[in-house]
Amino acid sequence: MPPHLAIRPLETNPYNGRMTPFLVLTCMVASLGGVIFGYDIGISGTNLYLHRFSEVKFFLPIDLRKRAAKLAKFFDDPAGVMATKEASLKDMFPWLHMRMEKSSSSYCRSSSQWMSGYTASLYVAGAMGALVAAWVTREFGRRPTMVAGGAASLAGSILAAAGPTVWTLLLGRVLLGFGVGFANQAIPLYLSEMAPPASRGAINNVFQLSYDIGLFLADLIIFSVQRSRDSWGWRISLGMAAAPSFSLTLGALFIPETANSIIQRDIDFHRAVKTLQTIRGTTDILAELNDIMTAGDAQVTTNQSFYRITRCKYRPQLIMAITIPFFQQVIGFNLVAFYIPILIQNIGFGKNSFLMSALVIGLTGTTSTMVLMTIVDRIGRRAMFTIGGIQMLVSLVAVGRVMMTQLSEDNEISRGYAYLALFLVCVYLMGFGWSWGPLGWLVPSEIFPLEIRSAGQSIVVAVWFLSAFVVAETFPTLICQLKATSFFIFGGWVTMVIIFIHLFLPETRGIAMERMDQVWKKHWLWKKTIAVEETQDDCFDDVT
Image (cartoon, rainbow, N blue to C red):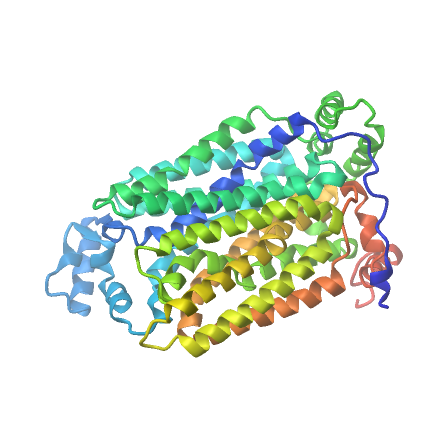
């Protein structure tokens, strides 16, 4: 038996306390950021199919109108619509719409570069926001970062919905991304630090549950406004993001800061004590307080945190901070969830039913996440990663087989096989919903020591958004060129991540965050990496 499989968990639930109603309410308020995140992802893929969304106007300055006139001649535009004062997306990029309308390939109907470019803007802004949030979280705390993220999302949703031009639409999109980057950086940390070790998995998974609820609400809103014959349909769908954004901004003002952040910033020792006593429901918090204070003694500045995380003793956490969010993207969930209305239509469902199909998938994801919340702190992270991974692998291979044999270039799949494909996709989403979906946020948020926690979580979120950007840009071309083979490629990635988790990720269930370093010291591989720094001043001393 490999040595890492024989490792027994360290002392679990080492602190006193219980799950209090105040803690539950506090974490529910913080998790509103997940609703914002899920809602914005949900409306991105379907808004482009609402009536008149593609006719939102550019307002062009005179010099740009002159350049547009030249472009009009180049693209043989006899009507000269590009040279007018107002030009819509449909006018400016007619070849994209023609390609989507005239393509006879079932796989290539979704290969709109405008669609992927519009949605990818969120991911670029989110990555930038996450990196900036490292400094905000470290210097001002988790709670102010959530307030700032909610405020940015609120401004972005209002601007995108009410703005008269495509430039205001894109600016609002960027603000939304920036706000989501702030929220995703702070909220998982906040939830993990507030939760007692024995319930950390369940509490942190509220973030993923909120994300699933946001996706569901987005599908519901889009389905409700899809028949609107004017621009109010897509404006309403964008503007509704203001509701959870406002709720997070307001609610975060009234929830407490984590004791970890208070002690790290050396703000008020008595405030940290009071916070711990309130959320734990007991006055006996000495053991937990001592661990946090010991971790706080190693505090460093944000810039030093980014440098320090490259040291040998933090190399395991850094590798996980990069690989876990990257793998979360390349195993296919975001592209399946994001493009699911298009895929459902391609495999045989009519235009009037593809949004209803998305609702079914949203319910599947929500249900599976709720199931995980009840078992993750008993079964463990590694086991659920493996179970969900195997389930996703089988589903992807099966879907690929169905599409390869039943879906031709010119003809739609039969209704029976279409329902089979939808069922297999739901099986995939269930596997993701109780493994890589929530655990991809939980595990990174609980593995970093306090001195590098803000920097580490920023790397996690930035890698997630950048990976999502690459996927959003490449997936339409990938599925158009490789067709059903793309599902087998995703299956190959799932196989790789199953092996990766089995070999390199130790179990973190029930371990106090400030004692997590002991987990790495007992791992069959990472203990060797950590031992290097204990005998040398630098990782690369042996090289130089």
